[in-house]
Image (cartoon, rainbow, N blue to C red; front, side, top):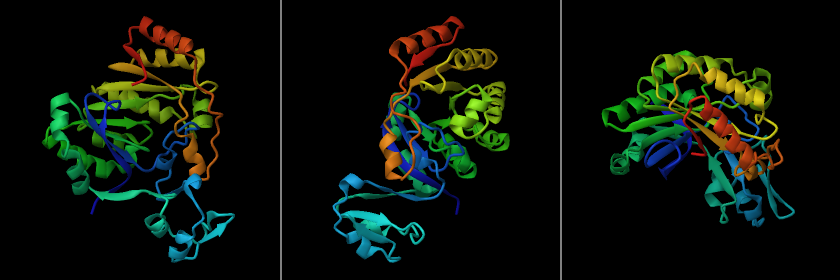
Length: 300
């Protein structure tokens, strides 16, 4: 049976496309952006997040673990990852919700059952469903089937994507996607490799191809001080987009809302949390895009 791996289904969203939407967050992403606010979506495999501040050292998780992979040290639950099989027993029985299982296999039928529950809200607000992540294109076969069923039911579909996928995968799903929320994070290839972990060549090529096929595209540009808040990037994006048909450019100032998640996953957060560009710089950048005829918003 065709299944996808998701981390969350979020209802009543208003920032992931037009109207009231349901946003489906897939697990797995080929990029490793330094500021990612959903780091639990990067690894395609299931994980367990640990909220240390909630742990009282009661030992219930250690007693329930069938692999004896957990011990209590200094009143804190410590996991031996070499023994852990991700069975999830520790998350099931923790009385303080200090452990959270991240990753859920879901069938097309199960996902559609969740999506159609709110179709009345989509219809009344011109909303729909948005597929995000992670990177939804890692689940192209699964996504294609869900998109086809949404099309049959008249549900508007959007995808938030990095564009880092083979054209074959992207083309397969594109004909059933009403709106692309397409990320452009760094126009300089070497800087893209540094801060995102991959080259941007395929991302730019795919964007051109989507434009050529007449796709509806909104560009989303996260802006982070020290990463891409410079004239080289902004001018380069404007030049590149001058040959691309886009509905709008959304400028997204950096925020640190996902910072604590890295600690819960025992990963390093490579930024300081102070990388938000000034309001004045954001305004000037918006005006620069507008001078070249782009419709622009800050946030959204």
